[in-house]
Length: 233
Image (cartoon, rainbow, N blue to C red; front, side, top):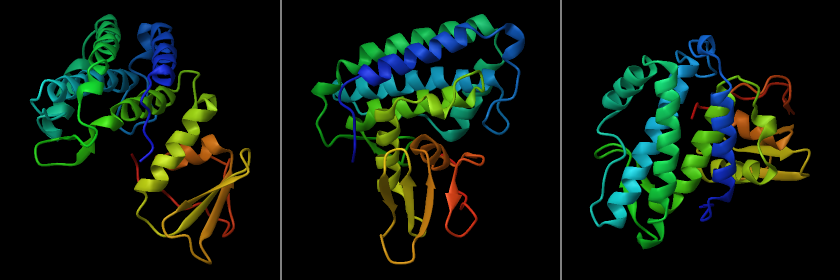
């Protein structure tokens, strides 16, 4: 699995997110985001709570007391709804505080065993602790773009785009596909690379955006004339 062990990219990504959120007017917060059913306030609330949850996971593992990320999906969703209904300044402050808390917690990651895992919810999906920085980077960058506030997937740093593509290649479990990044002259094989696999081509950032289940618009082309839909992430 492709992980990141340093926080340089994450630090910069978080700073960009905070700048965007600081620039939102109060009447921007109820506006629709790129996440179905969520306003911008919901997305920002989710980002704050996600940072708090991941910080708790890292602290728990570092202290020898494994901790789940969320008590349940229902509790997670309810917490997002509750925070999203609060005043914009309160949500903004919670996001900034959670970013600081996550950064502080991450210093304990070297004390965690390399093969340590945690549950997203009790008995649910298991994830590697060493992947936490990359998990958070994805949350920050993808949902920053979901805010539709002047920052999009085309603004993602090149190294970040490649990390996302490499991760999604490893996790993909659908029909074989070839994703050709025209700006990198590089092909990413999704599923078993076999003769006849459909090739989807376009800029690397658009491919990475598409693999999250989001609409790449007209940036991608397919040998069949139709770009397959991806499961949302």
